[in-house]
Image (tube, rainbow, N blue to C red; front, side, top):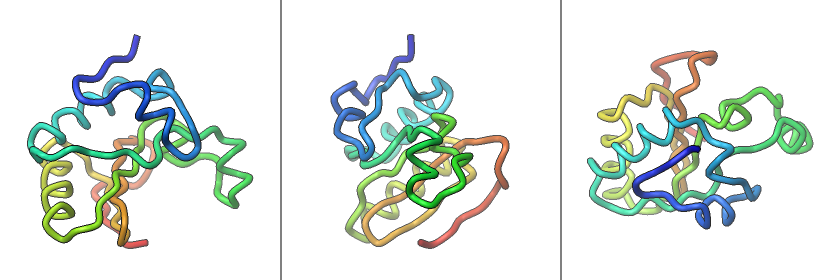
Length: 120
């Protein structure tokens, strides 16, 4: 059973696409809990697990970290919160981070390039 200190099933049900806490990897959620604690602010998830089929239907590879249950997108729309989230993710051990105007992507996939930070 996958568990989280800060994230509840309902939050994953509200993601796009809808998913379940149980679709995620425990190691990823444990790091996410640590980051949330370090940041000291709520993390609102906008995307988490995506099936390979859903991913491919959106023109993606179907093999990204979201399809492994090892990635989340966290809503973020202020400079201060963006700093707090990215700082906390790095301290928690995430080594793959993407930054968009409205969200931060974080994943801990070992099968993708490491120590990368990108802009959308």
